[in-house]
Amino acid sequence: MKKIAAVLMAGITAVSMCACGGASTASTTSSATASTAASAAASTAASTTASTAASTATGDGSDELTVWCWDPTFNIYAMQEAEKVYQKTDPNFKLNIVETPWADLQTALTTAGTSGDYSTLPDIFLCQDNAFQKNVKNYPDMFTDLTNSGVDFSQFGASKVAYSTVDGKNYGVPFDNGCVIGCYRTDVLQQAGYTIDDFTDITWSDFITKGKDVLAKTGQPLLSVQAGESDLIMIMLQSAGASLFDEKGSATIVDNDALKEVLSTYKELIDSGVMIQINSWDEYIATLTNAQVAGTINGCWILGSIQTAKDQSGKWDITNMPKLDKTSGATNYSNNGGSSWAVSTNSKNAELAEKFLAATFAGDTDFYATILPSSGAIATYTPAAKSDIYNEPQEFFGGDKIFSKIIGYTSKIPKNNTGVYYYEARDAVATALTNVLNGADEDSELKTAQSTVEFAMQGNGTSSS
Image 1 (cartoon, one colour):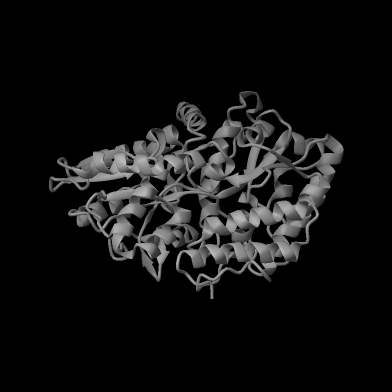
Image 2 (image 1 turned 90 degrees about the horizontal axis):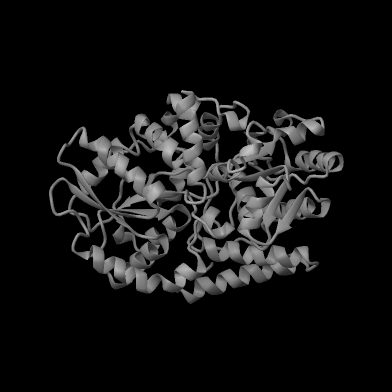
């Protein structure tokens, strides 16, 4: 098992920036949105993707399926391994996997949905969680209802399932894990007289108090964030099951008590020096690997980046995140990033697609144990926690069984409403936060943010009321 653990650590390090988010900026990595450059080129690239895949949009043979997804070392690798698993049941089964960057895939979905012509779509495609509901609501005839597909959705974390659930129907099979963790340098905490247990099941006020003490005694802040990004804001909101939208999809940025507590907490973190702001994603990662800060609170995919600092092996450990002090329903658990598999209505083998997904991504713990070492794909399928590899102590993290711990956290993450205009809302709130930190009036900035989102909604023919 030591050899397996060594391979596991090396594999996760290799794909740390390719996992649930990918990479060049914080928002692309943790929020799972396409980069500006990719978006600019998406239309042309998607056209190429569509034309390349059009002749094989769905498998021609009775045992063949076409899949669109991105990232060869993560999603594509997982699909290849899932194919091998299903071939044990059906030796003639075959996947035609077409590498399709997320920006291109989203553009292809939009193009097909707008035209009403789904003929170019594959049998199965991967969809980023925060865009799932928007796509289903905009193009409901594109997605196959998987509610009665044989997938046992109760075996996944409820919050993960909620991303691909619309009007009580399931349209996606959950895949990679964006469960939020608190990850800290235990040697730094020890210098200040603390252990990882002192940062477990605590509130944000407790965290700030202890963070000030750590800063005073060691000179190291506990956290760093990329300026102008809203990842931590959204993490805090979801930890209480809160959102920027109500159940009807209306923006609820103004008079949102949970959001106000989040902004107040964020400002206190900055003003106290417990959290520092930096300018880029690369700088953020550097603060962790060069010991500029003593920890981070982010999606569990951040583990791979942390482990690039080989000299820090044994000096890190993980726990859950702090919870809001005042907001009703506050918990120590949240999510940041991730994606789920969808079956298109263009599929001529939809029943086979459903059986395949149910037997692999939603039914095989050995499959998840196989893909973890090489891809770092931590499951949201809760039975996977029983696999030996998930319960293997990890030397880099002080011998803690971090993977089974993460799956345990996943099952406790509250559901939240991402809303159709999730990205517009989080960007508007990020702008508001930046202005508040620079001295602007909070209420005025939140009103501006709400107006910005409502304008975007009206521009797309959607009322906010």
